[in-house]
Image (cartoon, rainbow, N blue to C red; front, side, top):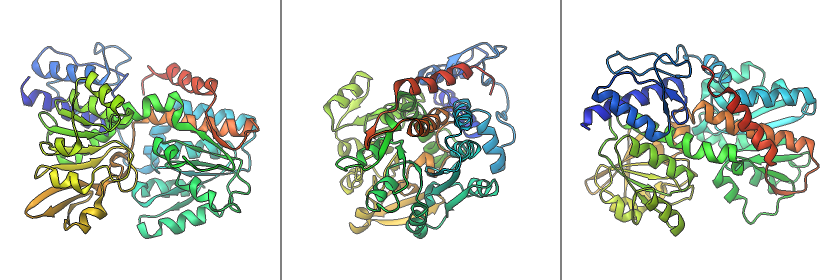
Length: 457
């Protein structure tokens, strides 16, 4: 298959994802025709996990015609209000959970705080909790806050602790926790861990919920004085968010930053650190669009899984020497260390899929003599001894800080699990510690999504 054909497929799928913020895997698409472009796009879609249907099939989320000009797939999503309402119309599981909470009356008057990536889908959850009677406040980290969405939520009556000034992050977190929340929904467990040191601010806390793998790791070794629901470990979150949502959105955000108007992935060598759910999803999406993915893993079981999936494996420093793109998907600080940067091929791109602070050891690189040259918004070059490495968004979680986050259908599942965690905290007298969401609640989220899956959205 020639480069232009698969490259055209890449551009079509990136444009669809950028315009709609919707998922490819599991959805139905029509690709009429039998020419090489149609064949390339059909192949890419099926490799990612989409289904092919006829152009007149009502299940088709979109029709991709090889001979058509650029298509507007989504209509107007220009304002924050439009983007929030657009997402809400496509998040049936969150809306259903909000209605259950409203009907129960148990959330009325309670102080609920959300420390999540602040974008249109999390806005839908916040508004659903507000509609159920909660006093809702949101904390937005400077790099993970859509300021227009924050302003729109404030206009709709929610309390916002958000800024685009990094220096204000700690002060805002402090003020957020001084509200003495009843329920805390966290991403990364930073706020949960802060509460462990602030018992007075946790005095009214019924419980918390944590939605990331790295956040649950962050609670290891801590004695929890209140219940924390392990949202990340619910199947309706873990099986879909990490692999399908993060895999698609991180890859496409990287490509959109590096080559906004051009196909970029086919033939690129990708050195991928980590083959957990995020890494596996990223690898599958990149390979579907023609990238040569090679995997570094420190867990021999995960390395064997990568081998079984058809990927070459090796050490990250070894793989970095031939890589056009080096991606960390480990959720561990220091994964792309100075040793990896020294080994990397000149001109290689560095990025983080998922992510925690310091996953790219930028501080260590600067201390070792690398210079940071800001090139464009979200793009900088690390320069040393005539070599350049392109660093995307300073190693932040790329889909959250430089894109619009995970696709809507994915976040409907993940945030509905968060809402289900709220229901569980209110319904049961839970002991302190880390607690799994009940299977029945997890299955209810998936069942709601299935009931609405083939509806035109």
